[in-house]
Image (tube, rainbow, N blue to C red; front, side, top):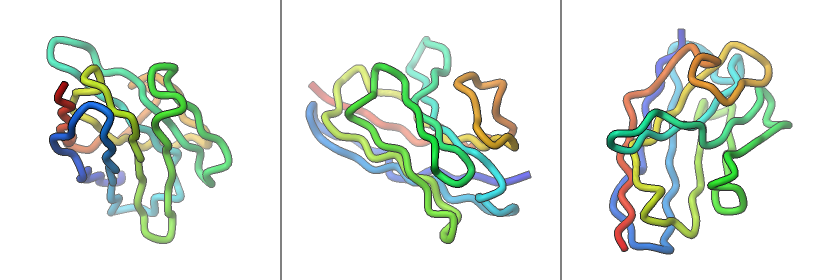
Length: 124
């Protein structure tokens, strides 16, 4: 199994930007398709974005499309989420996840490994 550690979260103003990183260890990241999810207080964990094994396929939740970009650097075993035009409703703990499939799904059950999460807070 792969171990995942997120970083890059923080406090940002409405309209600001952040870049999250997820470092993978234990297994080669290129063996996995990967995704980002988020969970706000009192809400279920929701899909944000996903990327296939060799980064040829990416897809996004409608709520972040056009503002967030998922990418990966398999040589560095690292997954990224670039977030622009952040809104207060983007406030959540953000988790990266890995799936042993070529193209991962949009549900939490599609993923085998999870990081511990990083807090993103967008102030209005």
